[in-house]
Length: 222
Image (cartoon, rainbow, N blue to C red; front, side, top):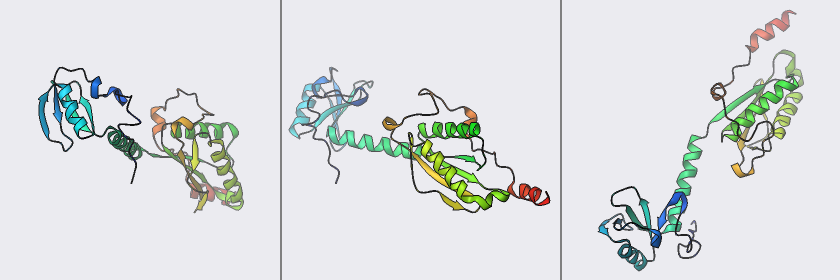
């Protein structure tokens, strides 16, 4: 069972909660509409009377809708409320996380490689997961270890903003690895500026792999 912060302990001197929420004796309206712990409408009354009702059951009076006329307050456990709101925010963030793919090859040039790393770092810094994909073509299949080394190098270069979900793995002609963003407070950018923004074209999947079979046919004829 999760432990909720005790609304009479940890938050005793914090009567103004997150996002400007007022609680208890910080509520300034002349009258408030009060919702009970079970969701029952207790009517309109002075904040002092509402606070007395909250104290009788060992809970807090929280102003949830300050712009309403009169403002709407609810009697509840402040610590539990914070926990539930944090949980909802986390679930919403997880639901909105996208998987972005960054593709490259074994023989990629240093400048292009840095460009790919910058792109991947940007995705990660915006809270997205990133799939690193290295594809072999033609004779590159004979040197697959180089592919693993290149993917490992990319993951290492991005360790300031990401952690690996698993080791690189070979799938057909590709070596892939999934990276997940570190918590925002722990991220250290290496290839982007702190205030960087993703361009519109960066929000789409990359399409820079040529047709593999066509390249193999060309190499076979040469």
